Amino acid sequence: MSEKQEDTFYLYDLQVETVRGEKDFVCSHQEGVNFRVIGENLVFSKETQFSLYALAAILPLIPAKQRETAETDWMTTDTDIACPDPNCGARFRITRIAKRIFRHSECTIEPLSRKTKD
Image (tube, rainbow, N blue to C red; front, top):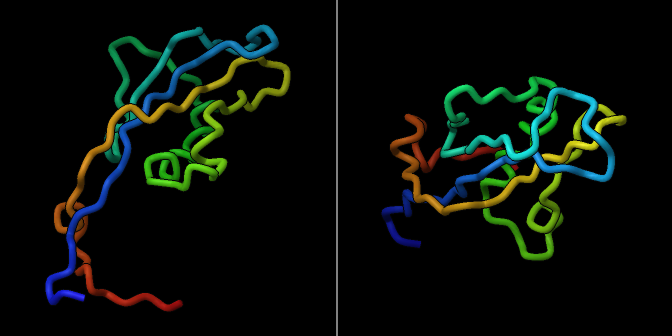
């Protein structure tokens, strides 16, 4: 291992889009409404409204979707997340749209060499 450890890592930019499933919508969703995830930011276009409850269902998956995963990992292959209302047919499609490079030194003040317990 070299004395100077690599300081870079990659994250995917994502788009989350409302798509129609097999049932009608019963919540306030609108097909095609979307937002992007760029780094740590959720980016909404002007006047975009997105359900708080749907967002709560999607948010735990976002960091994993941003990272590289194996081609056979379900986090890679499964893109549609169901609306948390079991009666609603809305789905939220998470698509990787770009790959962005980040530097550890620009994201945290913690030293890269800090050890954690196994």
